[in-house]
Length: 423
Length: 163
Picture (cartoon, each protein chain N blue to C red):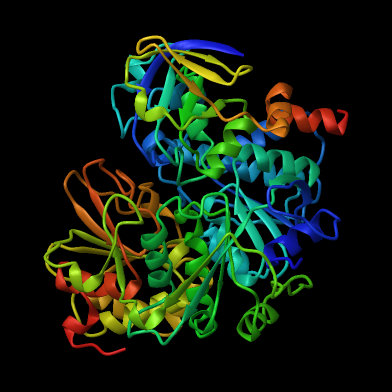
């Protein structure tokens, strides 16, 4: 019987010819990741074992991106703990502020994740790297601590669901809209414990940045991972960056799936997910008369170069609506620099936006844009749970960067077409 | 394992931001996290809960972030087990890895806040003393039992490493 791309990667990493769904395996990990919120617990657990060294100082990535530049004394202490650990154990891929970016934008950009890798990270959006044809999944700090010691992690081989995306996309429809549409269809536990595999012309025509947005939000459907088999675009992306060799895996024709969904992209409009679950999606045309207080463009979902360019296209020569705050956060220093080079920062500032250094910040209600009671925000982030961006009685609507930028100008949720902009 | 306590009942899709909001993630101290356990779902929870009580919920409990602060805060608040129709996978993993008992039970709709429950993991049943009913729980996979029996993942790994 054939195997899926996910089964093949997992089999190769536990030294087996084949693996089957529900089988428990102990697999070798190519990269293990933690951030300033999750690493401190992992470090404390690791040090409790009395270990003298980590399994491989080149296979650990530590990215202090959540509450940095540090928002208060406690978060500074957490970041310090991570920094001291990195120094003590000689962790090669520790990223100090100045090199740091949002982890899931940063690691692919630095070539630290390549096709065929098996990656675990103490952050639920670790599934982002599936866009490169890697198996990547979020775990807790204790899993990371054990992996620091052994270089291994246990997995239950997931069943796979296939999503075939066909047809031509409408204007201002990006990876974000495809994944929001899917979550709206299957629900926040629609892919519970499963690997979500995306394929079809609707995927191959997408940029890598848009593909990262799709894999990133697999977790919002409960998925263990999201994966897209590598193609020419993937290899083009990896070639310029990779710090190691890669291996391309693809699913066999007779691989087994628990479900197969076919989605006609020509029928998908830009999506807006209403509070308080990412599954509460509606086409933007139905989102009328929702006034906003804040718009956030950034995060591990939509803080990449494509997102910045889309936002700039909408904002060029326009002004953010009165009493609306627009916060733009390029996800990495490289993206920030490219925004400067391309003149996008000028566009953002002239429109009345603020531009921040890379941070997860407002996405999880950490800092840099917390909402007051009763306020509403549109955000290109990934979660709109109760209290996610601040007060438990505030509201977050999720969208792509074109909709978020247009909404910032309109002062209410709306589309670029309402401003007379064509893609 | 035999456990006895009161039920605190919540709905579907109780996410990790409700269990422990990110504004408290600037510490990983269990006693601090316990003070804010379930705060955005039920601000009074940390005051109301007694040692040994159960959190009972619908489907997809613990969805969202991978923050281990969520199971840490629940454990530190004194909760002996979480009983839900299903669990989000990272939460499921985290709970076993750190030795918090979680139980899958399809009949949680029948349980209300305040019900006195008795859990017998060996027999795989929950007795609702208040309502005089018995529910089945999904058996824990052997690998998970081994993890729990070792006292969580780190102890398990230490044992395997022989250190």
